[in-house]
Image 1: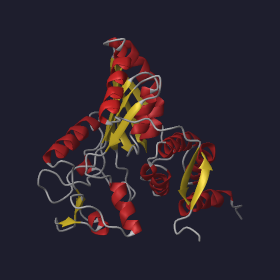
Image 2: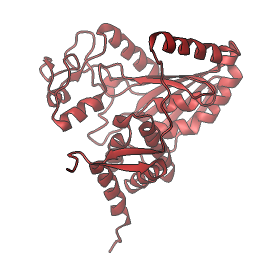
Image 3: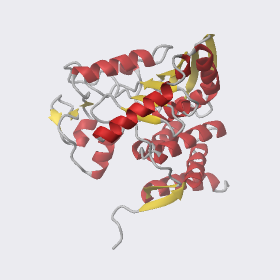
Image 4: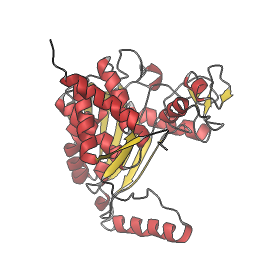
Length: 334
C-alpha cells in the first residue's frame, strides 16, 4: 500500500543543487543561491526540517515579491577591533554572514571575544547554522535573531514581539554541541505545519484573534503565539530583540511580515564569537568532560551530536514544487 505522505530520498549534493537552482530561478544571484542552499542542507542534515527545504519556499516567495532582495550586496564595516556590522541590503542573513564570517573569526581569535551585528535583513532561518560554523572554527557562539511580531508577551493578547530564537554552540574536536530554540512555546513554522496537516496544537502554544487560548492552529495563525515559561520566556524574547536590533535592524513591532506583502522585514542578528583559549586553553576538554558526565550519570545529552547523514528525505510534494521552479527556468522563451 502506498504511503499517504510519500517522500523522496536525496543525497546532500542533490538537495543542494536543487535548492540552489530554485533560488536562481526565483531571481536570486548565484552568491545568494549558494548561501541559502548551504544553509538549507545544513538544517536538513541536522534534522531541522521545519527550517530546511520547507522553509526555503518562504525565501523563494519573498524573492518573487521583492520582500527579499535577490541581488543584495552586503556591506561589512569593521567599526572597532572586536565590533563588526553588516548592512544586509534587504537580503538574506545567510549571505550577510558569509561576507563577515572570516573577519569575525579573525577578530575573536585576536581579541578573545568579537561581536557581529547584522541589520536590514530577511529572517535568518535556522540560527544553529551560524553557531555551528563558528564552533567548527574552535569558537563558542551565541546567535540571537528577531522576527516580525508574532508572539504575545507580558499579559498582552496581541503579538508584540517576535518568536525570537537563539542558538548556542560549543566547540570540540569530536564536533560542536549545539542547541537552537525559539523564545516562544513553539516555532511559528510548527504552527503552520500543524494547520497544513489539520492537527491540533497543545494548549499553551497560542491565542486566537480574540486573545483566547486555542488548540486550533488555523486560529493561532490569525492570533499570536505564546512565550515559553510566561514572563521568563518573554524576558528572553525581549533581550534577544534588543540585541538583534543593535546596529539598526527593525524592532519586531515595526517589521513587515516575512510571508506577505512586498516590503522587507529589515530585521537584525546578533552574533557573539568567543575564543575559549583566551580564558583557559583547557576549557574545551573540561566542558566536554562535564557534559559526558551528565550524559553518563543522568542520561542528559546537551547539544547532542547527530550521526553523519549522507542523504535526507523530503516530502514528494515539496520536491516537486522545487523541481517545478527550476523546470520553469529552463523553459525556452518564444
